[in-house]
Each structure stands twice: as C-alpha cells, then as structure tokens.
Image (tube, rainbow, N blue to C red):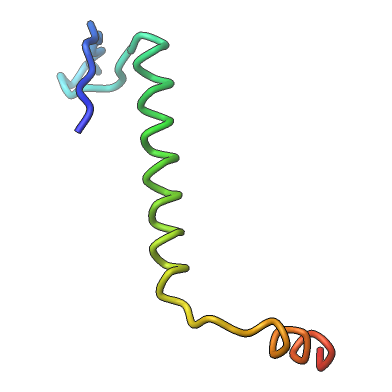
Length: 65
C-alpha cells in the first residue's frame, strides 16, 4: 500500500462537519492514478473470467449479425 506525505487542509461547514479538503497537486494526481489502476485491475479480472472464443467461432458470429 502506498502512503502519502501531505499537508492537507480540511475545511468545515458552519455545522462543524467536514466540507472539503485541499491537497497538494502531486498527492492528488498520485491518488487519481491509483484509482485508475484499481479500475483497470477490476476490468482485467472480470475479463479473465470470461470464456475464450476461437477466432473462427468469432468470425462466424460476426457474419451472423
């Protein structure tokens, strides 16, 4: 797991609940990359579970549609 060294600033609403966070740009972009990587891993895992189709069967299916 990756850890981030940051000096985030938390802004609170009048009610005292956290409203928003200000992050360093480098930390923000690193976090976005991790999220995108996680999404890619999920897609890859889902595709690994799909059945394989031979090229000839694939071409036959294309001609039918």
